[in-house]
Image (tube, rainbow, N blue to C red; front, side, top):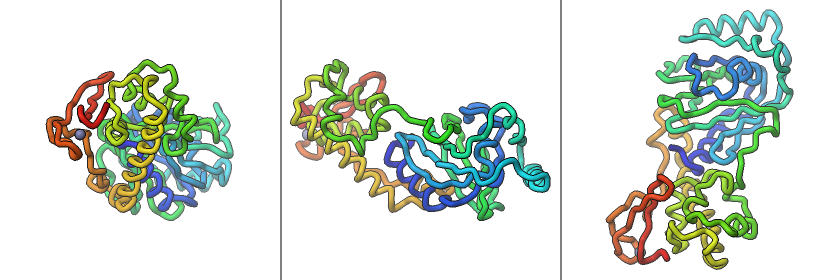
Length: 304
Ligand SMILES: [Zn+2]
């Protein structure tokens, strides 16, 4: 599952490739699961909109859109229909949703990659992969596609500013606000770090790695952690995420392209996934426990 650093890398890669493009037409597949907003509304919002920015919010990719034209002229409609009829699966007429809800001039397209979702930027002739759920034709002639075999990914649209993932960005939060999150909280610190209402998008791997660097056991009650330890945790979360983003930055093109998965260089894990292996610091075997249904890895000697 793509974690925050991967999503950041993908969003930056997409920003480089598609910012400034106008979405000329949209094709959406028949599978219902990937569409969190009605298909007609997604198509009506995206078509004839310019992508002014692409950024990450939590684990979501957000495309900021600006309307460039209103209802397409009859000639344009015909052209769009022709384009669509060449596509392999069903067509969603953008017009269907327009009566019900006016299309806002500024809007957002929100993509969550789920487990296996990928964004492709490709030449129009590129073969359409199985499990392609959306194809956006761009003004440059290229296409932006959403592919997701397991269909846990989600596409939705919102009026500009309406979409606000819960929680605070872990890379932006100041220490005092960070410390406040855990005050009086009786849950294990690991659960608190994974709680999306507190911090956006710190995943399982990065939570384990940050706790290791900060020397805090994952099962420790959040409210029992000293201010000094919280200060360490705050800076190590940011350090771990930044390191992972820096590693991913060198592989943007591979990741965004069709054979993406192999492109993201992972952070060298010190505890995550290393059960029974020696701690890299003290050689004590790494332990694995389950907290709230998720695996947690820690060194019983280095972490207190
Ligand atoms: Zn150790």
